[in-house]
Image (cartoon, rainbow, N blue to C red; front, side, top):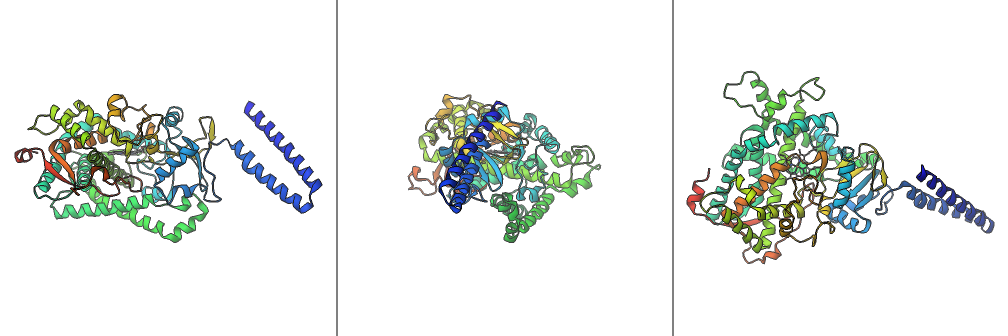
Length: 543
Ligand code: HEM
């Protein structure tokens, strides 16, 4: 009430001044000139006084029609552009993206305010042509906050990501890891160059298909399986490319004709159909259906069986084939690229800092005897390795801007008011470089987490380290992801010494550029050679 009164008084005050200005102007100027002066005056009222009344946080001046979109497209990577802008406008910044109001968070303190005061309200996802056509908002990651999302999230949390389920797949993970170590050992004997990202992606995908379908899907040297892998690779790169494509009509709806003319929508519909077909064949939707009710006694149901037996959220029917397929695709996409990217970044950082690499190996050697491989149970005793993983998550969050969020209802942040449907961008990349939270924030220094072991990605109240997002929509795969990243890095460092492919390169000259998209892999895949730290018999006895 008080604020409204002050607002009204301000308006009256400015109104009176404007009127006086107009009267004096009319007195001294001709009618034509007075008209010009009035227009200028009205523009000042519109853009200065009314804007003030809007009560928005600072942000760059928006261009007509497109608003601040030019700040995000073209030029630097979007998370870097937003980080630079936040240096001028602050950790709570307002942008107008076409017609869409948007607030950008760039500090731990502001992130804390979002998630402690507005978590539920900030838990919906933004809409757009890509997710609409690709998933019909049916998948877990794209569904708006509501009964459908809550139902899927509950099923996935209990049946895929609970501690019990993650522990149940330990043997499968170990087998996949040993397969990777043997492949690297073979490559090292032939002195071949290793593209680590490729090998890690195959391992991560097998980890996922073993959890989802109880079988490994990508077998080296098996022609059918290699072809299947290539089809999926092609599809995934198309999906990532189309997800990252800028679609003007998502922000300026009356430019839909331009999106249609560009052919994007047509291409997207084709990708959607191909994804559905490839994924439905891979998960064997039809086979599962035929088998239902006549399984042999030793048949162990997989996650698809479970989804098929689940009612829909309103219990009126079962989950649709579309929902099942897109939940599976969601897991495959979210679960394989992200972990592979992170491990590749960790190794790149260590190659640039050989002392840190040696320190990690010394810790591994002191905890694990020479003649046996790392086990998941060892990881708790490796604080230095854990600090390296945290520092990698900090400097290289795999999804730097998180997934797009939207306020369900009008809300207030730091005293500013935002209407419903305001987009919320959490710039995780910037939050992790917040100078109030970290000294020398751009440096890779695992020791910072040795001094503060309590800062933990698994602890939901440390907003200065949130590579998995936060709140209700936090990544459900985070425990599994941390386990896979830490354990893989432990194996790679325990079993091998690593060298850049270019043997005469100064470690500090290793190119650390990021590539653009929904995720941030290295721009150049890390090409390495490996030298075994163990005898050939060690690799022979692996599973
Ligand atoms: C290094 C590994 C990973 C990183 C950095 C990562 C990061 C993220 C981030 C930032 C989000 C958005 C959260 C938000 O809106 O606040 C997300 C969502 C999600 N992630 Fe992950 N993720 C990783 C691994 C995984 C794995 C292994 C899985 C599954 C097997 C997974 C499944 C998902 C799903 C399904 C969502 C959507 C959740 C929802 O909307 O309710 N992620 N992830």
